[in-house]
Image (tube, rainbow, N blue to C red; front, side, top):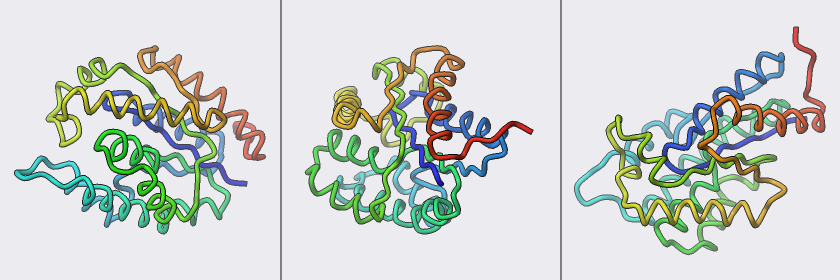
Length: 213
């Protein structure tokens, strides 16, 4: 049986680092695993990612932004997620549909029901078995990103990022059985151990665990 794990969180939470660490740990056990991310993971999505992240004069309307993310998601599901789940692999994805609800819904103020309908279409009904939310106060997360050139999202005001964070916490509270909320200010090693405790149980439940070779 397959397993689908997603990582979510606001800017600077460390989710990409933890997603890669989890993929390495699962792979070392000899379990077939795929690491991917949004927006990206496919040729089309990489091109759209540039459009979404680049700061530009005039910007992108919230609805156009929503539909561009949906296009990326459709391609990722079609090319990467669905085929590998059918093969019984572990899929680890850095951001997925919940990001759209948090950023374009709570952050931009688009209608949540509309976003959910579009997500349902884009994901073909696929939902993660586990979503890991690395929660961090907005100011601390943005401070971690200060050494890098900010993209369109990183340079949004504090109010936007607080709405995104609040959105994530509401999503997690609505589906506590699917979400694992972790304090992202904890040491990286401690975070990794918390993640592994939960994931290892799911691997056993899905009959995917193997003895290290």
